[in-house]
Every structure is written in C-alpha cells, then in structure tokens.
Amino acid sequence: MVTQDLEVPARALAVGAHPDDVEFGAGATLARWAEAGCEVSLLVCTDGSKGTWDVDADTDALVATRQAEQRDAAAALGATGEVVFLGRVDGDLVADREAVSEVARAIRRLRPDVLFGHDPWRRHRLHPDHHAAGRLVVDGLVAARDPHFFRDHGLAHHRPGALLLFEADEATHAEVAGTRHVEAKIAALEAHRSQYESTMFVSADDAGAEAERFRRRIRDEAATAGRVVGRPAAELFARLPTDR
Ligand SMILES: [Zn+2]
Image 1 (spheres, protein in one colour):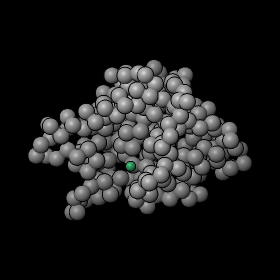
Image 2: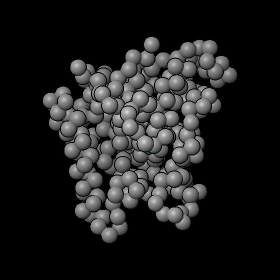
Image 3: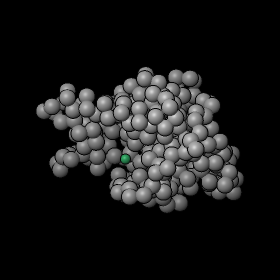
C-alpha cells in the first residue's frame, strides 16, 4: 500500500548529508510544493569537502563553491526558505548530541509541517554520512517535538506533521510530479557544477552526450516511481508518523 500526495504544506524542511542529496531525493516534490506556495528550506549537514576526484583540489575553495552551488540549486527549485549549512566535515558526520541539537534547533526555528531526510535504515548503504544524516533527522525530530529536550535552545518545541524519508528500501508514499517539476529537479542538480564528474559522470570530453544521459536517468527514475501509482512521474518515500 502506497499513499499518495500529502496536502501541500505551508513549510517544508529537507535535510541532506551533502550539497545535492536533497535534490536527488526530493527535488521534484520540493519544486512542486514551492510552486504551490510552500516555504521550502534546506539543511546540509556536511561541507562537501571530499566531493572531488581531483587529488590536488583546494578543498577550502571547494567548500565555498559547493555552498554557492547549493544556493543556486535551491533557487532552481524555487525554494524561498533558508539554506542552512551545519558545516560538519564531509565523511566525518556522526549523529552526536551536538549535531542532533543543531538539527532540532533548525526544526524548532523553521517549524516545518513536513520534514524530509535520508532513510537511516536503508540496507547495504556505503556512505556513512548518508546513514548519519538519516539518524540526525529522526533524532532531531524527536528532540524538537518534545519540550524537555535541549531547553537551552530557548525556542518552543515543534512537531512536524509528517516525515518523508528518501532512499527507502520500501516506499510507502508517493508524491506525484509534473514534467516541469522533474525538469526543475534536473536544473537544481545541474547547479552543482563541481559534481559533474564525480556524481553525474559528465566529463569535459563528452559533456553533451553524458549530460543528456544524466538527464535521461533522472527522468527515467521519476517515470519508474510514477508507475507505482499509475502516474507519469513521482518520487517515492517511506512515510513515518511523527508521534511515535
Ligand atoms: Zn551525499
């Protein structure tokens, strides 16, 4: 059983491990909601400083580049909320209490109705940051909703109405996407120009054909997800209640 299409919320917050993760996981949904007037904010846990295959890369410059790219990507989604950077070192993210506090603080401050994140229970996942970022969104939600966690925040507690986890092994929810929302997702992903080679496999030599292959892959993934609910395109999530 897969539920379909939440009511478009007033505010949404999507938490990703690295710049670009949120766009891969929920870009079309966020674009559709932003278009409908939802205030979309993004929270990126790490600085993206290991996101290159260039062994001689200036990683300080890469961090600044990736923040700028993330802001461009948010604009491509039509997101009008904040882009928050926790700034943890790429590859070293752990769901420690300090990081949980920071995510909970962002939830209490931005007060999203729907929260997105990596599924921390996904099997066979290699990247430790994706696991830790998933853990952070779950633990951050629990801390944000209950008033006696992190009272030092000086902020009212807040419980989002829904938690949608991307990269889930077993999807329980679909958000339908229109063509323009899938194209906005692609535009947002392509704003991460520093990731063309390492993530999108677009090399300088054959950029045109490889870029087109990447776009086709994203469109195909959206179409495959759409078939689950008999629609042309969608994104799939594990939907969790936020009161357990
Ligand atoms: Zn990532």
